[in-house]
Length: 220
Image (cartoon, rainbow, N blue to C red):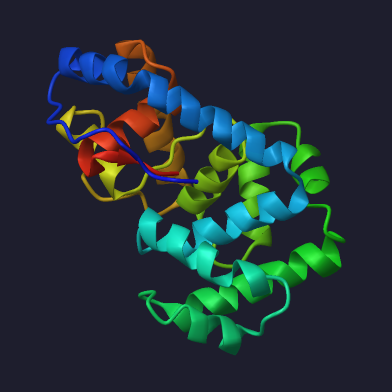
């Protein structure tokens, strides 16, 4: 999935936000369609997205993309040590490699490779995210939200540093630091969803819009 360059923007008012969103909305909708298509490509594609989120956490989306491309040929077979060698450019090669192997073992052995069936069983989006945090080593609430959004589930706030800083500028959040507990995450997410309704922008579109305003591109 290639990066879509859209250009940065300084957003301090709802009017500026709506104008920027309107300008890049075709690219935003294209990316959201691509996320939904990931689910349709099957369990291996969904697992690869989980690996991407593990690699992007604490690093960057671009590093996550590079990491997945690098290890894709041996993703299902390589040991943690072998993955770490391939991921030598990552900020945390051994830690991320260990997480990948741990999660792979859960998917292969506990879920018998049927990751989509496991995800689809949950009645609501909160229990689905909670289950991901509990099941997969290295996945917190931000990463779980990121993963679920990237495979087509809607309505999650991905409260990474870019989004949180934007929300702080708009006065939505009191702090520019990402929330550190489940309670704080849910509170910040509720504020995010209320802000999306206030400015009249779909929450999933708002996430990619705010992220692009800070980075200049739409990744995933």
